[in-house]
Image 1 (cartoon, rainbow, N blue to C red):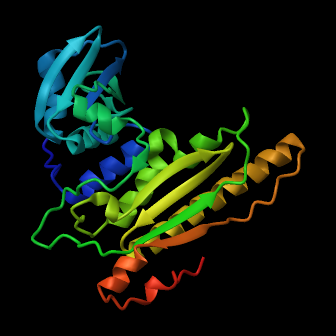
Image 2 (cartoon, rainbow, N blue to C red):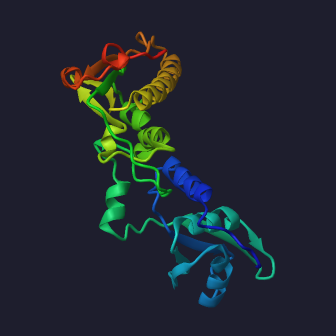
Image 3 (cartoon, rainbow, N blue to C red):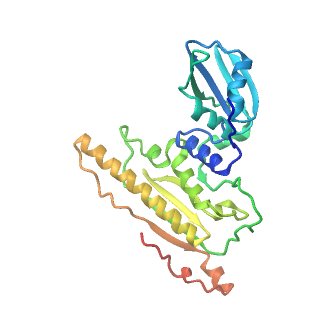
Length: 275
């Protein structure tokens, strides 16, 4: 195969990360598990030849009639899986079947794979000379109470967070796009799920009004989707849903400091948002 794939492209790295998180997988996966129909008969050399066109291979081996390929970059592994899964290689008389293998080889990748208590933006792969954002004294906070009681047939916490937290990860990633993080990433946007007296609430905060409003809008959309899904669930159960209007409570912290520093910012007095 004479193919030249650019596994270093920014767009490809973002796409790979997005797809993995959508599937509830770690965005750092680099290892693929390869099986064939009929049963595996490839040599190690053949295995390497098939996959090496998609990027640098860190390790290749054959275990228990499976090929194990570890790439140096997630994007290379992603390309290989997207391109070769369920593909017939006629000259070899086989069909490839490819799955992600979560080896969790390092403590760092384990931590990133776990669902954290609080979601904050992660450092971007795209680094240039643009200065980092500088947080001001004001902190904007919003709480969205979820007016649904968790029950066995409707797993509310999972609906809110998404698989392995992918819903919250996606929101903070969208809010961080195109921005160089401040010294403390949580100042750009922070998102967490809290349960108080049996009721879940989504809590978001930011020290940047535009990011706060963007995050608010995304959370608003997420809650609406959950409420619509719960209405359909209630219809199937033959029950009436509670009042499912999206509600939020907003708060601005740091006003006293802002006044002391002579900051003339209209957002000191109110948060302007169409929701």
